[in-house]
Length: 427
Image (cartoon, rainbow, N blue to C red; front, side):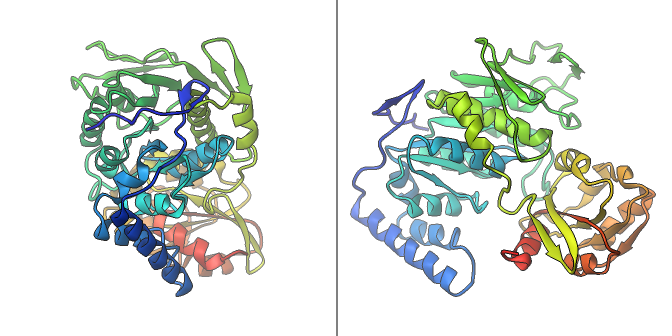
C-alpha cells in the first residue's frame, strides 16, 4: 500500500493539501455520469444518490476513487460505533480550513465514499467514515493523512465476522500506512493492539465501558486485567500514555492545556467521539477551543436524537445496533417515557439477532415497553426473560400511536431507525 501523498500547504501541526488538480478524462466522465445518476435517483424519490452515484463512477472508471482522493487531505474514520457522529464532528471542525467532502448519509462502503468525493470534487479536505470490512481496500485507494480508530466490538457477526479477525485486518492496514497518523482510543485494548503497528500513533484516552469483547489479549490470548487506572496483559501489551484524556466534560492534553466540551449531544459516548475529533483536528491545525465551539453547534446526527410529534406523542429517535451501543444508549432513556424497541434484520443490520441476549434489558423493568420491527417476536422473547412487561406491535410508529399520553423513546437498529426517520420526514 502506498503512503499518503506529500501535502503542499502547511496549516498547524500537519499539512493540508490544496485540493485535487485536473483529473484524467475518463475520471471526469465517470464523475459527471455519477452526478447525473445521483440527481435522477433524488428526482424519482429512490434515495439520496449516495450509493448509485459512486457505483456508476466505479463501473465507468475503477480508478475514480484513487484519482478523486489525490492531493486531498483525507481522514478515514472507522470502528464499530460512532463513525457517523465522529465524522460529522470532524467535518464541522475542519470546515474552518476549507470545504470538506463527507459521506454524511452513512453510505460507508466504497460506493458511498466515491459518491462523497464526486459530490465535492474541489474540496481540499475529505472526512470519510468507512465500514471496518472495507477500510483496507479504501485506504489503499485514498492514502489517508489520518486514520481514526474508535472502538471494536461484536457487530453483525454474519456479515462483519469475529471482532478479533477485524482487529488483525486493521493491524495489517495500519502497518501498511507508515506515513499515516493513526488517532486511536487507547482505552480499547483491541484498538490499541491494531494501532501499535503504526509508526505515527496519536493516543486518546476516550474511555471504554464495554469490555466483553476484550477480556483476553488480541496478541497472546491471555486474560486482560482491567483496572480504574487502565488495562494490561502479562505479555506486555498495556494501555499507552495518551496525549489527550477525557475526564467527564473536560478534555486534557498531556502538554498542560484543557478544553471544556459542553456538547448538546447527550451521553458519554458522544463525549468520547468529541475527544477523538478534537485530537484529530488539533493535529490538522485547528485549535481545541475553536474545535469545541464548532462541536457545540451539533444537536442532531443524521436524525439521531431528533424529536418529532407522532399522534400527539413527543417522540425522540435513538439508534442502538449492538450490545456496546445499547450499553451507552440505555442510560440516555428518559425514565418517565414509554419505550418502543424496533429491531430489523435486513442485510444492513445483519441477519443474526443473537446480540439481543447480551443487552441488559433488565434495566427497563417497570417501564411501558413495546417490541416492534421485523424481529419484534425475538425482542419480545428477550424482554420476557429480562422480566420486562411489554406488548408487541411490529410497526414502530403504529406502536407509538397506540401508547398512552406522554413522551416516547423510539430506540431502533439501523434499518428500523432509517425507516422511522424517513417516515417522519421533516416533521
